[in-house]
Amino acid sequence: MKKLLILSLLFVITCQFSAHAQWLEKKGNGYFKLSAWTLEADRHYTNSGAIDPNSTRGTFNLNLYGKYGLSDNWGIIAYIPFYVKTYQNHQVSSVTDETLSEGEAHSSFGDMDLGVEYRLFKASKHAFSVALSLGVPSGDKEGGSDGSYQTGDGEFNQNIRFNAGTAFAIFKHPFYAKSYLGFNNRTAGFSDEIRFGIEAGTNFFDKKLFFLLRSNTVRSMRNGSLSAANSDGSIFANNVEFVSFGWEASFKLNPSLGVSVGYESAFSGKVIYAAPSYSAGVFFLLK
Amino acid sequence: MKKAILAAVGILSLFSCIKTDLVNDRVDPKIFISNPLSSLKDGDTHQFEVNYFNYVGKEINNPDVSWSSSDESVLTITEDGLATGVNSGLATVTVTLITSEENLTITNNTEVDVSLKETEEMTVKFEGTIVTTSSYQLEGSYVLKVQDNGVLRLSLGDDYKASTSLPGLYIYLGNNPNSIADAYEIGAVTVFQGAHFYDLPESIGLYDNSYILYWCKPFGVKVGEGQIQ
Image 1 (cartoon, one colour):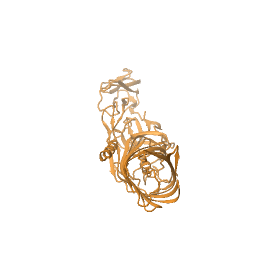
Image 2 (cartoon, helix red, strand yellow):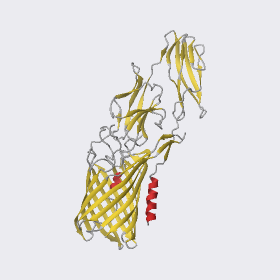
Image 3 (tube, rainbow over the protein chains, first blue to last red):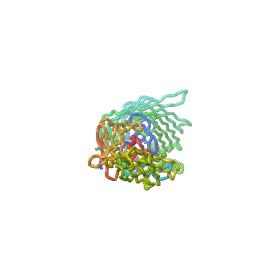
Image 4 (cartoon, helix red, strand yellow):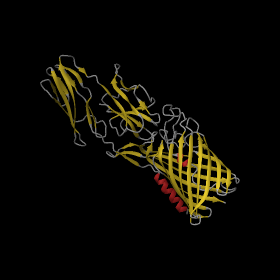
């Protein structure tokens, strides 16, 4: 059987190293988060940016995200979606109640991101770092009866990104802002990507409650060879583009443990679901 | 706190259960005379046949139809659709069905030339246009015709173009533009520009389908269609 042609649209958002609104961890310190993440959509942005309907599809994953300081200048980062479920709803006739197509689900380990981060510069309230992460194709690039229930893209990508952050105060209330610019080198015929984003946050109640806003952008270089016309590969998440907006709130239950909830949605895009994603998790601070 | 975490994960996982999408797949029922004549020899008989597709495009065998002739001095027809040429001239044969589900009256007709010429079934080809029903590019002309060797062929014209960004694009023949549940799957689309054709199996008749459907299989959504009429 020819390899199946399918775009799936989801992991780009979830694979952004998610929100830990701090800088590079100090030596021996760490941030570890166990999250559940879900997205369900009956519409998607097409390759022209228009919104078209689709049968309701969704993805749910359980993931571990961790940052750990090997030294004051070096840290490691990991995003491990250890359970990913992709599914589609049953299609039932509203006229006859007959099932037009059976729903289906496929679950497996997802694509991991493993990386290192290096502090380039730090001066009082400003910090600059560079991170290299490797997208490990540990998920299933084909799944389900027609192969379209993928939990991974089947390619090994390398994402380098530069981070800049600063802390400041408004009316004596502490805030931080950070931004990043990255290049995602994709393989196996996928187009490379430029990624950039901004994030701003603050805390309340003596650093117990954190709240951040962020925006992520992905632009495709459109230099990949995969398309529906050459069926020797998957077009899973190829030429994805989006601008998304999201927020995340975290609450520290004690000095080392807390919970968080998040929301993110693309408000323009191409080849991506037109629906928000939600996440909830518990985090542990190692100090 | 464990309970809170479990509750949060549980609530999120509930969202990820397979649920049900309701699809309004009602269509207008249709009836076709599937073996029309171009001429009927005076004194010959011809058994007309019909295809009936109900309110969801499903074929119903042996529908309870009635037949009539516009001019019984030219052509007579029995309740079972057996026509006899009586005199030279033109007559219109009409088939009528009152649908059992919705009590709708639907008809189809064909004009018959009764003469001294030999009886001949009409050679029909359907021509039309494929149009996109989505935001993806899909367009072109088509011809559906029985070839000299008896094979039914669907031909797409030089002007055919389909977006190569379409995932899992398949082509079908069916009678319901909102569903492929009862449609015939021709196969995955592998040609995205220019003329090409599909030879159809013997089980597919010229009058068996009223739509060419282009369907994004993974997304379960129609991308384009061509009406066969």
